[in-house]
Image (cartoon, rainbow, N blue to C red):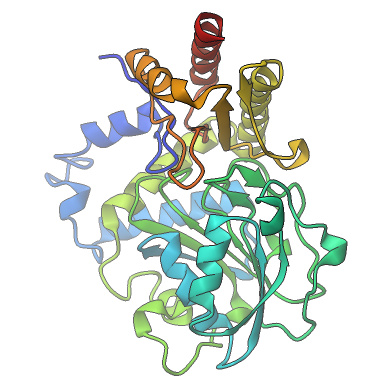
Length: 360
């Protein structure tokens, strides 16, 4: 069997060795005679799977003890509502930085539960750059500051962690978590949908400073309450057990690769190789200000959009899948998350060069 190179933005490619282990354990996990999918989440076996996954994540990200880790259901979009419900009192102000489609979705949902103030936006620049932080209108009394470090759709990424003057910083790290080292202590809360760098869809990881727990609005649904989740070790109800198990396998794989430091070096090389080819070509273009280009999601356009269909068809024939850009921006997009090997990027560049030679 030959596996394709899957450039999907999410659900994204997973490490082949992780998939192989999950396959081998699918019917019988370590001699128990049953699949992880069939286990009680209260069983000793599954509790150990969950405990080990959290421990490995803490080691990979150097998560301080004063932070709680939650594994919960849904996608990152569910956190757009959970965050203001947990961190802001009724009518309390919350600052948001608007840098793309996911920021806008978080803002729209946040407005349902808090007094949202857009402290900075690059929408007038077409979301091709990050707003100058010296011009941000941050509130000293805000409950939190929310931003999206990497806009998956637009390929726009912060190259700095914002300074918020002591106000808790909340980050949607769905598409960059564990892609390189990160100082968790700079954040009040981090959240990430699993389906990019963690594992399959259906799972969200929340990393929250413990002193921020217990601030929830009285009307908040229990299932959204971070304090309840922490007190019940992410098992207030039946969790997404198989997704959690697979995330644990991915964490083991990451450690075997050398951890986030080694992964960061590899991801830098992948991004530099792809952007380097795009910039050296007269046929392809990336619209993002170079300083703020995403390492994980690389959008690009062809000189003639009439060739898009032919490009995608030829790519698929070469085993290069899911390169079509998001419908809101068009063009192409290559998502090159942790599990995408350098060989996949090289194969894409080789195909792009051949297509340019034929059609340029």
